[in-house]
Image (cartoon, rainbow, N blue to C red; front, side, top):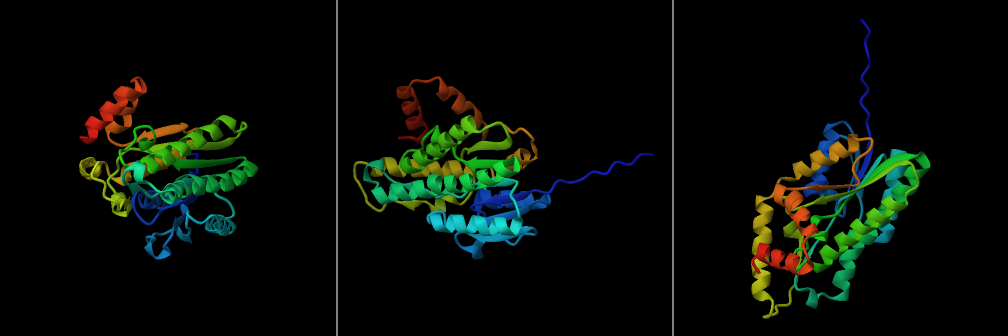
Amino acid sequence: MRREAIFKIVKKIFITGVSAGIGKAIAKAATEKGHEVWGTSRDILRLPSLPRLHCVQLDLSNPDSIAGAFNTALTEAGNFDVLINNAGSGHFGPAENLSKNEIASQFQILVFGQVQLMLLALRMMQARGEGLIINVTSLAGRLPVPFMAAYNAAKAALASFTMSIQLELPDSRVRIVDLQPGDICTHFNDAVTRGEEHDARYDAKVGKTWSAVERNMKNAPKPDLVARRVCELIDQTNPPPRMTVGDGFQAKIAPLIFRFLPQRVRIWGLKRYYGI
């Protein structure tokens, strides 16, 4: 009888934001599949203890930290098959009252820092002739959450930059995926910076929106769902350029409906959804 050896392909994966939430779930799922993971956090002590997880300290607000952390990890790993841009942060409050520094901070963490990592990985992967980059953006880039204007805009910017790269890439086996989660049940809201300035014109709407956001988060799918989808992408030779993940309404029905609605109706619908 002929015996065929089955070889398990172990990949080297660089993931940002592994200390909690979606990033932690992805790291756990990937290491359980036997992959080697280099996971990052601003506070290395918050990283989980997992087999095949290599801890990397990285602060997306600091461009020097980004380059140093990635290049140090790359030296240790030799190469990366996959980059997952997952780390994030949020700010909640009226857009009218956002300072330039608050907007700049959101864009540094959610756009500039992640693009910097993407370009570092892309050069290495182009030289090797293959690789996968997954940019975790958000459905909020298409269906904005009230009072999270800087977050919505930054996620939309990263999604647009990702599509531009997809358009421009020369023929190769380097793939880039825009992964857009809807609400996922994590502790993300606990780390969201709340605007300290109270504005009577907005206070009632801010309160109603925050209640809706908290309710949606508690009832949302667990981060394991995103982790499973990411592991599927890692295993595919030709993954889709964009994937949404979340509950059926947010991930499938709402984006489809909103595509064909005029802007006035979209705004009305979102106001109704958040009760404002």
